[in-house]
Amino acid sequence: MNTVTELHTHGGAADYRDHGLIFPRGFVFGSATASYQVEGAFDEDGRGPSIWDTFSKTPGKVWNGDTGDVACDHYHRQGADLDLMKELGLGAYRFSIAWPRIQPTGTGAVNQPGVDFYSRLVDGLLERGIRPVATLYHWDLPQALEDAGGWPARGTADAFEEYAAIMGRALGDRVHTWTTLNEPWCSAYLGYGQGGHAPGRHEPAAALAAVHHLNLAHGRGLQALRATSAGDPEYSVTLNFHVLRTDGPGNDDAIRRIDGLANRVFTHPMLRGEYPADVIADTAAVTDWEFVKDGDLDAVCQPIDVLGVNYYSTATVRLWDGTSPRQQNDGHKGASDGTAWPGSHELVEFVEQPGPFTAMGWNIAPDGLENLLMSLHEQFPHQPLMVTENGAAFDDVVAADGSVPDADRIDYLRRHFTAAHRALSRGVDLRGYFVWSLLDNFEWGYGYAKRFGIVRVDFDTLERAVKDSGRWYSRLATTGVLPE
Ligand code: IFM
Image (cartoon, rainbow, N blue to C red; front, top):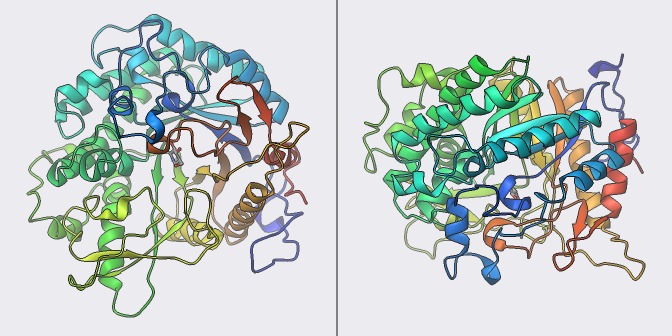
């Protein structure tokens, strides 16, 4: 069996464009999607409305007025999409469960057709030898729960615990890995602070309450999954870490502040059972954190088998002098406009970064992934890691023969897989890697304008076409060797 120490590098080019690298046996090569981004069938078989249905149908919120009503129509094309995954040789598929399909109003009776859809998906994956990696929450909160206060309200964490128990009972005999939340940073700060994501609120104090209730939902949801899963699944959570840099001396405090709000406010309670004192102090003018009740931190801090890491790009910050025009370039979904950073938005600015860039305007920085994996390994030495999302949007061009020669996406993936391999060689316990995304899909506020897929979706006909990057990734997934 290959061990990490047997890994060898090929060339070791400083630009991270390598090939021939051998990944350890057992390393999992997967791809990921999320329910609202691919499923469509927004009102079928008893599904209730989610905050993204409401938000996307609010004029001006999503590019071109796009919605997830149809998306990739994955709900009706499950079998064909499963065959596609098998054809690509994926070892795992990371999908999310739409809470409003399971409980249309977020609490109470189970909507059995919704459960059956995911049960068929899990069975279809297992039949094809693909590991099911299921996320309970990838942003499609039932609208009724938002109407009752949303994530800033403690009741949403109570409801999540109930939902987790339902899913543990239904699929816990077959799911390989449970993930409680995807990117709670986005749910809290983009949803309730900056407002660029559903439900689109601009309330800094509510954003911090949402942070805590998402953390609480993670911990209590994980306990519920553990108590109800009849099999022997692994447990995880996925965070979108901010890899922070600065462009001059004297900016340590800018890095500390954003690292606290973006990263440590999740990792410390989840993995150490405490909120960072500096974050509490930095946000004192916004909230007194009275929503953290006795016993909460014990509930939040649950052992996990693997920590999911989503990485796309870096952010460069510096202290803002408060007089010059505030810079807002961060490569992170417009979050640099300040309101996403309660307590720090008057103090920190996000400065322009060197390219190259993807079609999202995000800088391509594979060294950021290596640095991130090393940093997490140093902070949490016994915690296995998994890259649960990495990938890139580019303006794909379809060739006359119908193929999609997306060399830029292959180049992006090559560089990031090289970075991951370097981290493995340096001792990081990295278990696998999921490319975002299997399919072009609904990219939130950008609608269908941005294509992340390794498989193209024609949004007129809904036909799928494997891109060159999909074929390249298939070679990696089936051989474990980084292809030419
Ligand atoms: O499409 C999103 C996904 O839903 C969460 N992580 C980042 C991706 C690209 O923006």
